[in-house]
Structure formats: structure tokens, C-alpha cells
Length: 360
Image 1 (cartoon, rainbow, N blue to C red):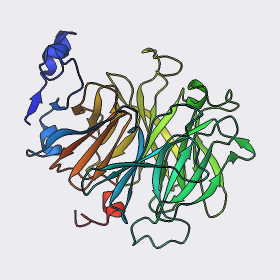
Image 2 (image 1 turned 180 degrees about the horizontal axis):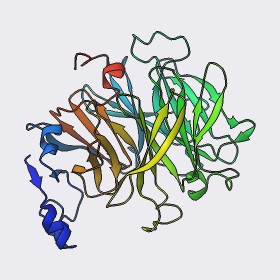
Image 3 (image 1 turned 180 degrees about the vertical axis):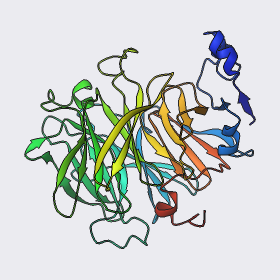
């Protein structure tokens, strides 16, 4: 597969230009690599190839995408179906791309998640656990739950801010130095009709699993969603998917905000980093060079650290999230799973999570 170059001047002058490209003028989802800047090919690598590896009759590939070394698999949360069927965890083997489903105790409606080292764990080892953002339902709290996928044991870490339950915890990242869990709380359980009306603001939190300290670190969002640390841990990126609530409204945020991280604990200097031209930026990750990748309305968008769009892994439909693996990027678009192989870029967390590529 070759890269498709996008003429930025033509796109700026003609609002219909994008739809005239053969790679985007499609009737069914298909994957292609759209280059908006010469650096995109450098980031992905000249030998990058892309293909579809699964197309299922239900939305198995939605969020999370957490690696488990023991079975060499990615754990992906499915999209919400109904209260009669809890959100499943889709297990994608990296050996042969086979797919199975599972559920974990005390995890009801899982969404985003992160690899997790419990307090005092040996961080020289690959993660022994995973943390899921459980959105909750009408009978169960929204909560952070630590899971060992190898033993099927779960531990509830957090259900409330000082006694006030969260609305629908959405996504989380563990700080690789402090071990704190940073997470977002949105309203999507309410908008999908499986959570009560929210009772507190949409905010970003920092939680210390060892001490129980939980702190609001940012507010003022319509719907805070994905979040990610820069590789130098000096910046936190947070997506606001406020354009999607009961329905899509393009006048509301579809925006990535950047914050400076102070002393590994607080945030300052909120600023707009990027705006998605299609849909909204959802799950977000950085590569080791500081480029920012986000699932959006037509695939995965990639910006450089200055917020300039470099290119897209275009699939022609919403990609809520994606996951890095060594030399690969897996793109989740609900019913479909795609992979880009021979990728030069390495995800920020790949070295620690997979225990490989640490020499970069």
C-alpha cells in the first residue's frame, strides 16, 4: 500500500476536494494512509502496510486495547449493547489475530483502560494488571477496577470523589513515575441510557492508589474523554468529545487540549492543541517522538508536537480508539479491526508494556 498525498492548498481552496480523492470516495469502509505533510511517511515508515483483519456482526472493537504478556493479547472493550448484556472484553491474540470474548468480576460497563502497576509493584516487569474505567449502570457505581486477566481476579480501586459517585468514568492512564491514575469522567452512560442523570461536573482527576487521595485537576469540559502523557511527562493531552451527546453537533468541541504538568500532580496553562476536522478525537496516545495520535471520525489522526496534522490512517468510519504494539498500530472501528504493520513509530507505553524496544 502506498501513501496518498493530500494537497493542502487544494483542500484549503475547495471544500469538496477531500471527497474527490479515490482513497476517500468509498462506499464501504476501507483503509488507506493519507499524508497531509511529508513527515507522515517518516513517522509511519516507508514500508508501512495496512489491512482489515476482522469484520464482525457486533461492535467488539471500541475502547481500551491493553496488552497482556502471558497470552500475548490485546484486551479491547466492546461498545455498549444493552443492560441485558454487559460490555464484553474482546481478546485479540497477537500471535494469530484470533478473537475471543470474556468478562471480569465487578466490571459492568467497561470503557477505557490502562496497564497497571499496583503500589510498590516491581515496574521493571511488564504490567501484572489492567485497570478498566467501569461506567457503571443503574445498579452499580461508576468506578476504577483493577483486573488480573490471568487469574480473573478484580479489585475495586475507586468509586467516588469524597463520597460523590462519578457520572461515567471514561478513560485512564497510569503515571509511569508516581503510579497515580489520571482519568476523565464524562456523561456517556447517561446519553446511552444506562446511567442516571449526572450530579457533578465533567472533570479530569488524579488518584493515588496507595493513599486514597483523589483530586480534581481540570474542569471546564463539555465531555472530557481520552487523555495521554507526552513522552517527557511534561504535558497532558485531554480530548473533549462534546460534539457527541444524544446526537452529533458540530458546533460543540471536537478538540484536544494540552496542559503543563506541574510537579507530577497538577495542571496549568490550558490551551487548544488541535481540532478534528471529521467527527471528534476520542482515544489518544503519543509516540516516543512526541507526535499525538487520536481516534476520530474517519480513522486515526496524527499531529506533530506543534499541533500540525501530519496524516491519517483513514478507514472511512469512526475510530474510537487504537493501540500500539511493537511495529504495529491496531485501529478499532467498532465492528471492524484494522492493522498497520511495519510501522516505524513506537507508542509511548510500548517499551514498558511489552518489554521490548527499550533501546530506542
